[in-house]
Image (cartoon, rainbow, N blue to C red; front, side, top):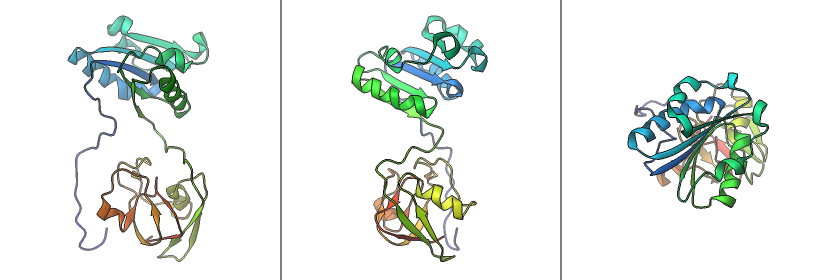
Amino acid sequence: MREGDVLTVRGPRNAFPLVREPSYLFVAGGIGITALLPMVQQATRWGARWRLNYLGRSRDSLPFLDELCRYGGNVSVRTDDVHGPVDPVEIVTQAGQGTAVYFCGPPPLLEPTRRALREHSPTARLYSERFSAPPVRNGKPFTIRLARSKRAVQVAADESALAALRRELPGIAYSCQQGFCGTCRVTVLSGEVEHRDNILRPSQRQHTMLPCLSRGHTTLELDL
Ligand code: FES
């Protein structure tokens, strides 16, 4: 922060809210159950139809199995050691017309699930949460100039600007790495930004960017 800046403190931001729907298919991979268990409880309170597929390597690796017992046949536990590798098609075909599918699990399972839903249940809506930065799509390499140290940082086509900046500035502030918390926002002194986030207002885009998602069409000079 600079002198004169105003600090606004808000409550926690929920990037994965449960939208009220008549039916849900929950898909939890391992520790992903921590995000979905409260949703299961809420869906039950609302009287919605729901099923939970709980996936993992073995039952030993799955927390909250005792809590889930009370939901009986609504919960399917599927482990690699007993059932073999997960088939996302088998899971998503449980999603009926217009079902809301909530996914929280490892990224390697998310993309096949998304594809399977598109092909087999196109009317279902997918809501997902990931624990890591999304892969960079259609990225091109570009250069960042650091105004304070005058150093140059090369950003490769398949890495985020934030990842490249962290090599040079390990203490740079960031949190979600997915473009919703705003923690990584930096001032752009020159250059043309390719904004890939959905949270900055047009006025903010004129002089700032979120390097966890956004990139440079040209060399960028940042106030870092
Ligand atoms: S780290 Fe959250 S918006 Fe960039």
